[in-house]
Amino acid sequence: MINRLEAVECVFGYRQRRANKSVLTAERLIFESGDFCVLYGRNGAGKSTVLRTLAALQLPLSGTVLWNGEDRRCFSPARSALVSAVVLTGFPSMGLFTAFETAALGRAPYTGRCGRLSAADVETVNTALKAADALTLKDRVFDSLSDGEKQKVMTARALAQETPLLLLDEPTSFLDYESKRSFFRLLADCARQRGKIVIVSSHDLIYAAEENPRWIFCGGEGGEIEEKTPDIRSALFSDKN
Image (tube, rainbow, N blue to C red):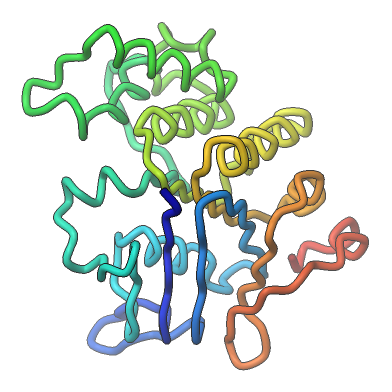
């Protein structure tokens, strides 16, 4: 099945006190199964707002976000959890939860109220941890991990959720250079080998470019979202992108 995510005549923004703050607009954005997309742009351009809106964590100020032709506003939380997995910036405090237990939360849409993992669920979580290079962390307390290690575990949680849509906000911020390369390779494989739609925001354009993504620029003239390849050479010497 080919899945399709669309943003139609969308104004992306947020509500600030009693007023709406518009940050970006898009007449039409279309993503389909197999797409590996990188959102880029300056800090504060609105990349996180776009990701949160596409993930149905917030509403567009106007326009519609559709999943296979259905308005995502009509999706229940349970159904939405079967469609999209999201990795945002920042890390929650997980108390005494281990890395494995944290990643296993990705199975919540499938385990019911009891939250009991089957043997297949355990295998899925371990496979996700291995893919995210976090399997050796599984028995450690999540809150004791470094930021880079936490990022890997949160990515494993999203992978364990096994959704057709995967959205990640600055997922390589805390990783070393070799881990950044491996991470973008993993995301590209999720799209091209497993047929997911993968949308990631990043400033690490050098490493992302190695996987030949579909580039989406946030913050064009007039606040429009554009499909445009970045000047990678300039990105080596500038923090503007």
